[in-house]
Amino acid sequence: MKLLMIQLPTSQLGAKERVYPLGLSRLSSLVPADVDKQVLDMNLCDDPWDALNTTIRKHGADIIFLSFRNLDPLAGHHASYLSSLKTAALLCKQLVPEARLLVGGPAFSLLAKRLMEEVPELDFGLVGEGELVFPELLKHSIGPANIPSLLWRDGKCVRQNPPGPKITLDLIPEMDVEAFPPDAYTGNNSYVAAIGIEGKRGCDLWCGYCLYPKLGGACMRLRPVKNIVDEMEMLKTRFGIELFHFTDSVVNRPRDHFEELCKELINRKLNVGWTGFFRENDFTAENLTLARRAGLIAIYFSADALTDYGLNLLNKRMTEEDILRAARLTTDEGILTMCHFLVNLPDETDKTIARASTVLDRLLDIHDPSGNLGAVIFNTIRLYPDAPLTNRLIRNGELSADTDLLYPVYYNPQKYNHVLHNFEARCHSAGVFSRLLQDKNNKEPQQ
Ligand code: B12
Image (cartoon, rainbow, N blue to C red):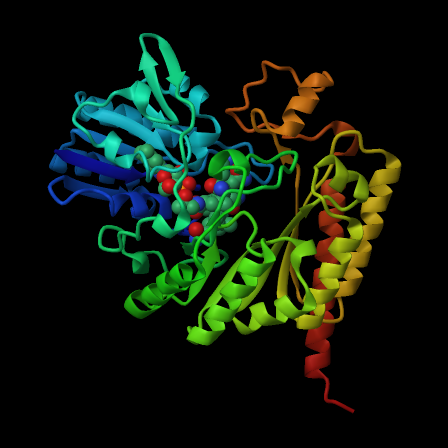
């Protein structure tokens, strides 16, 4: 049996920030030795479409797995990567019409049924993680009705099976570093750590706009700390990887698992750097210091709202004070910090905007002396189907239930759509002035 595993192009061609295809790499290591397997990450190719064409023609295929990670770039952009999936599916069906075409990956999982309708060449789709059902998908003929989370065609209908059990994280397969060599991904990126590392899957928070619980499950499945650090050690020793991005929804939750991880990294003297997304209210001065000693090089916060009004609306289970307290902690620790906020939320008023502005000023003031604020990133909300906030907007009549959320739709009513630019400009000036001041202080001889 011939199997092709393809990672579809994810970001704008030319963006050059490489991200290791961790999901496909794990699945690849489950392929039995008697299967004739060929893999291709189109993101590594100068001409990805020529590469796909050549790979299919040379290798042939009975089964083709497409991994679709990103549907759109977020950040207010209206571009879509839907064409990646469509063109790849068309090309596959044209070159090997008999091959079974199956798609999975985070972007597919978010809009699975809609994508099956939009791309009729796809025979099957899988929502969520692939490991437990993977052996079923490789069989010569599959009984689609029995495979959890599978989408399949029943005449003109697309059927979606209910989800099944999830893998416990001490059992996740290793990365297939032969098929997807990690060192092919390093050395290029300016912003992003190319290699992802999994500390957990799933998320037990239900933030209003977010579908992470749908992707990985609504409770956190923790990976044994030893396994995490073993994988980091293997990647460092064999491939010289010294920088990792934790793929967890939140790295520092639950606290005891996070602290255990930091201690293990310190004890093993791995001497690697790592980063990821963190929650403000789960840091303590002690565990932040511990994390820094363990290699934490930068913190990404995504408080999402600047006011108690917004935090409440987005169900963030945090307060303005938590945000400011975390800012003080990271400033005291002098650790590079990036903050993400969503602006122009539903039912904002002049008062909530003014409050957001005050909290932003406080945040900038706190960071100013140590200059550790790398960036403040403002976005509007990308509406996903069935997210709590989307449903609320539909109920309130602010969004039509027919809106096709396959294409990027942002919540950004006109009245306050200037706020994002206003806040961005303020942070930009603060950053420039702080840098100029530091440069000046560095250049001037000490009295
Ligand atoms: C970590 C992460 C990042 C990190 C990556 C760091 C790194 N080096 O890995 C950073 C912060 C850099 C990042 C950047 C971006 N990200 Co991101 N990211 C994630 C996150 C949280 C986890 C992804 C991950 O690695 N999971 C772990 C692996 C093991 O799981 P997996 O890939 O899902 O694979 C499993 C299954 O999907 C399935 N599977 C996968 N492929 C296939 C194929 C088949 C055939 C089958 C059957 C199954 C299958 O099986 C796998 C194993 O179980 C997801 C959200 C999420 N929870 O998934 C967003 C997510 C994927 N990112 C997203 C986006 C948009 C981006 C950016 C474009 C954002 C931006 N503007 O910069 C960039 C793109 C970067 C790039 N070049 O790809 C979106 C995609 C949805 C969309 N709207 O398009 C997501 C879903 C988040 C969101 N907001 O909704 N990201």
